Amino acid sequence: MKKRYFIFLSYKGTAYHGWQNQPNGISVQEVLEKTFSTVLRTDIKITGAGRTDTGVHAKLMVAHFDTEFNINDMQELSSKLNRFLPPDISIKDIFEVNAEAHARFSALSRTYEYHCVMEKNVFKREYAMRLYNVPDFELMNKAASMLKEFSDFTSFSKLHTDVKTNICKIIRAEWTWNETEAVFTIEADRFLRNMVRAITGTLLDVGNGKMSLDEFRKVIESKNRCNAGASLPAQGLFITNISYPEEIYKIV
Image (cartoon, rainbow, N blue to C red; front, side, top):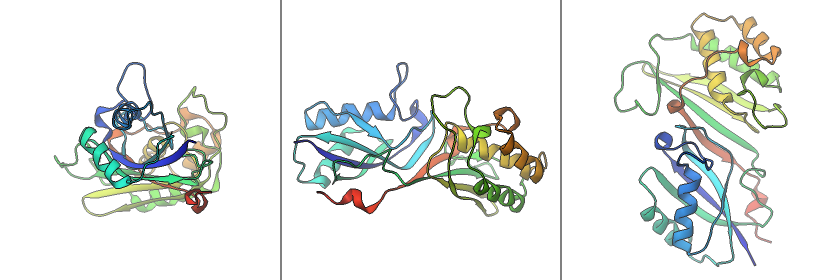
């Protein structure tokens, strides 16, 4: 009888063509499947909680796999996998969940952060976008609060994707900042392709005086990607949390 296990992991996305398997580039999913299959000595297929694009990082990603093996020592398995995995992918935890639990479809919400720096920082070059002037963060937070009033985010979605709906529920959207760094945090039940980077880029247009609050609202209402701001570079984006109902951890 097959059992289902959740994997909690992190990765630096710089070297990968995103999470999902690609025909012409190495992905995080591919590396994990090869490593799990090698260590467990059976063919393992891994399903992620979502996709991250090329160059996007994960402070926390969740995935699941099925196997007929009884895994008695999760810590030992995690340690062994980490010895086989490259240094830019790390297993944090593995544990059994109930058979109906699904890394993607059981998730209640996902949280992303976009990181910016206001000065040249050689140690964060691959983890943040450089801002060359300080935007009006308070104004950007006023714009960000508008996002919770809407559900259709077509204006911030990559064009010609295969999703059936552009409806999302945004739970949290806010900037925090100090003299040298700024972080935009956004939590929603689901996200569209390129959505976070497009929202962040449009918010920076507001903060830099290129777009008013009224114009920002009209961008959302237009449901037209051409009206929104530029999509920001991938290196500043992290998926940081995925929440699940407690029921998935109860083994029936």
